[in-house]
Image (cartoon, rainbow, N blue to C red; front, top):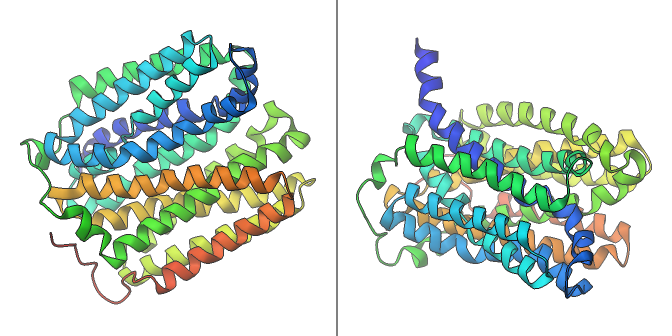
Length: 396
């Protein structure tokens, strides 16, 4: 009976996570094909094609904080629905785009639906305090798996439909999920009344050493993630072909979800465990990159990707859980907005630097990733993450 109640309590979190996963996959699944798809559009230039790829991450970073602040005032559900509507409009506009300029506008609209931070806040409000880390792990796993799985599913879908219809398919799926949220999910109790975050929230959050450390950890984690997903497919396609990438990504994802569940369970037992899991995850991230130097070996790429995904998904879940453990309900949306802006800035800068370094030297690219992983270790070790006492919430 207890298990049935637990599953029932988590169902809204699962459905919200599914919406975010579908959104994440819809953004990622077409990414490998946009640069070539743009060549058939009116006004194409390589620079504009690059802008079409990257502007999504930029608008994500810009809009995370406004969504978070507005969710504290108007409620999570309302902002989630507004964000999803913008994503759907952007996807439909992409379907009808016949020029590179219109595609860029559509990608910017897709990115403007920056609702991940709000979703974290909402999922926390859906459950009791003791189940918050579990809720975060569900949401984090759905989003991370969707991002990675997109690289496996995308090439398979591309075999049976055009890029334009991939946009439309994602729009239809997101619309169905939007309708489910609209009619069947209730806003969290803390957000049923309009309530603005206290004055000075933004400044005081950024003055908190632990909060800043967690944001920088998210930045480094996403920097590495986008770098791996940029470079790995280039090497992997030479071994498995585009349609065979699932042979690497699917086993890696399965192992990563299992690892994440075990890591989160152990981290929940004590604040000391939490600290060491965060450090261990960055250690694993750095070590995983070493395997990518042997780019002609299927086994080496599989091992590297499996290790990296284990670390990435664990960090994504635990860092977000730590942020929400130190945030009060009255400004949780603002805190998550800042947090997710740091993540997407990591995406944008990571892609930019990796693209630049890859054109110079593949080895230099991987060495840089190892350095980023080591920076994460140092950051957690000396950044003020609590070890010997209960995490204190930031008082505004």
